[in-house]
Amino acid sequence: MKGFFSWAGSILAFFILVFLGTEILLNVLRSPSLQFYRDQKILHRYNPVYYVDLAPNQDIYIRHFAGKWEGRFRTNSLGMRGLEEPDPKKSQLACLGDSLVMGFGVSDEDTFCHQLNGIELKGGARQTMNLAVDAYGSLGAVRRLKDMAPKLKNLKEVLFFVSGNDFTIPEELRAKGMLSDDEVDEIRNQDPSFNRNFRIQFELSRASYTLQALKLALEQLKVQIAFTTFRMRSEWNSTGLSSESTVEQTPAKYMKDSFFRTPENKCDPNAQKTFEKRNISSAPNPDIMSREEYKSRYCPEPIPDYFSCQDKEPSLDSLEPLPKITQQAYDEMVEYTRSNGIRLIVILMPIQVEEIFCRNRGLYHPLENYALRAAAYFERKKVPVLKLRKETGEMCGETIETRGGKKFSGIRDYFIPEDGHLTVFGNRWAKRALEKQLKELEKNAL
Image (cartoon, rainbow, N blue to C red; front, side, top):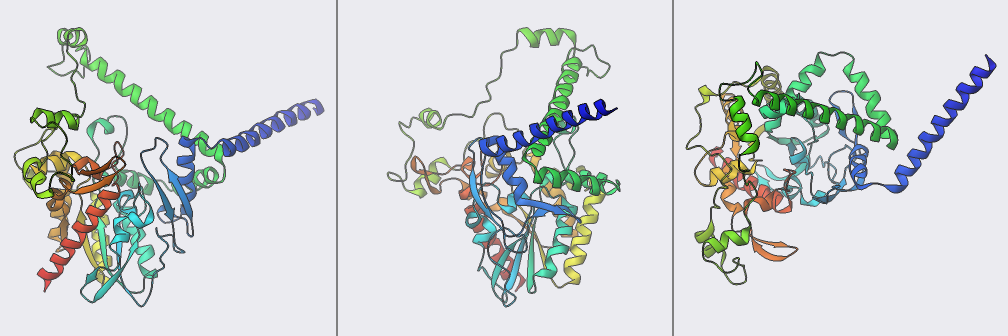
């Protein structure tokens, strides 16, 4: 027995040494991919009501592991993004939403919520406070509002930014087992042990670099398994031999597509080649062409061939109603703001370039369906809805300064590639669009 305990103690000591060694090594090496997730973890903390919020008094510089963006993230004493503390002597306007509103991709001073600070509305200038936290669905947003609003003694308006991810998800992702944020929240609410289990794993992975790396590895493994399973099932269905194969999926078509189909070229067209097709020897430059001339000749931008636009919006009757949990969250938000004398203003901001390319040409993309559904719901509740899609025409022909010098902007300059968050230019556009429509809303109210 003594030998057994000695052997077990040696094994335990070995694993402890390996764990400590790995912890030290990871902290010294600071791998860019791991450090990106590590910094995000430190920026956040566990919240017993809505699981995650921002840790107070943080100052972290986060760099995307692939170099797509970087920015300084600071929080005040209440865990809101930005250093400014709420001033009870000032009227306040709050921004509420997910990572897009929080400002992932840029530093504090570049977020559109920060840039709105000082906006003049009815009753004077507003101090803007950013309540947004990434990874919130509709339920998380209303819980965040009810938690933070009492700490803002003079809160006048709340700008709630609806996200399509709250209650919709592409079918190809759903087939891989992924769910919308609201569906995830509904499952969490039905599991009494979720909160406890979530807190344990969150606190442990926040305390230890090694445990967070293991957690990330397991999550990636799950994603890869789900993706591989999905691809194998899709491939089997396409052979025409599966019971789930469609009428169009036949063995003959599978053989033809496998060995004779010409691969489609879905690469984005090179900007220089686009201008060459129009018999233009060089890309227009702000130094040699006025903005007005550029916009008259090249705006709106042509729609890429691989975008499928529709001639008009679908009727509301043809769209599914909002999920019940989403409706419950919206109802709770409307009731809370009205009972506390806070004006709720819903913001619909286009977040997919497909929407904007189509809309700027007077067409429609189905990715905008979520906005139609949410707008109809809030408008029935007599809640004002601002639709920033009306301002997307400005995304073509603005003079912007890039690493390569001055250039005229295009839609893609306003979004971080393969990420979807707003760039510095995108945040500036959002600030201008919000300021314009908020002023118009005030004018119409008078």
